[in-house]
Image (cartoon, rainbow, N blue to C red):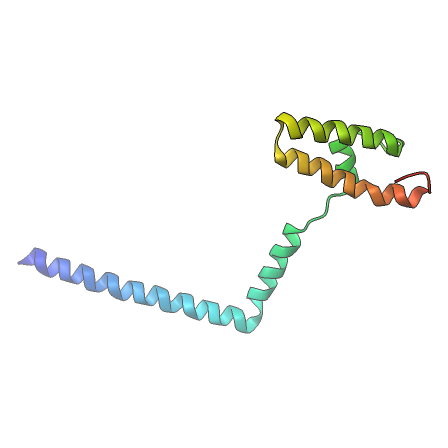
Length: 115
């Protein structure tokens, strides 16, 4: 008899607690959308996801210095890209490609004999 009462009390208590949690979550969402916190959080996430590669990082990936000529950079790019295409990882291959893309405008601005 006591176990039946205890079980009913436990079921009713957990139901009340679950409804309170759902109601609090809905209220938090409503407050966030009114204050613009949700939009700001989304914009920050987009900014972090689209973080551009720096020139220094691109040079480290390709293993070149600031004095390296563009044709030497292309040779390193092709070697690293092909090596990762055959038996490397797609992630590293994409990093190599993004590094080359990052350095292209730098060398394009330097003069007409570059990319």
